[in-house]
Image (tube, rainbow, N blue to C red; front, side, top):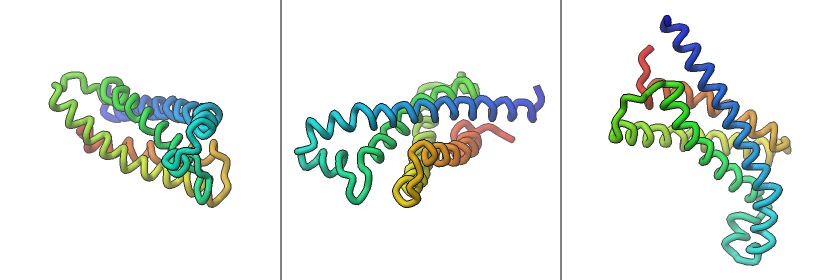
Length: 159
């Protein structure tokens, strides 16, 4: 397989998995919006901590923000293993190397998570964009950024 074809295959797999993670992210956020947030706010909303950090919608929609943070965290854990073993085929790594990759991966995940949540937050809170549009745009930009970081810095794939 030529280097160009290898890169195309990696990018295709990376973005197919990204699309699957966007779908999973959406499902987690909707589940939070429909099930968890109403339950938590109904049963624990009198507690000042839950009211402030989870149930409050003034000045910002905290249930949506918390749902977004949880969804992004879950999907990045799953995506790490898909990227490592399937996309970049890093099966010959030992535990120490995998741990270092994991730390780098999540360091970049934190950066792109801030990017994702910030973009989604701006779209939904300031531009009154529906959740679905905001998270698709935010996650798409984040995954594009993350692919190039992962390829170069996490899994050390040479050009």
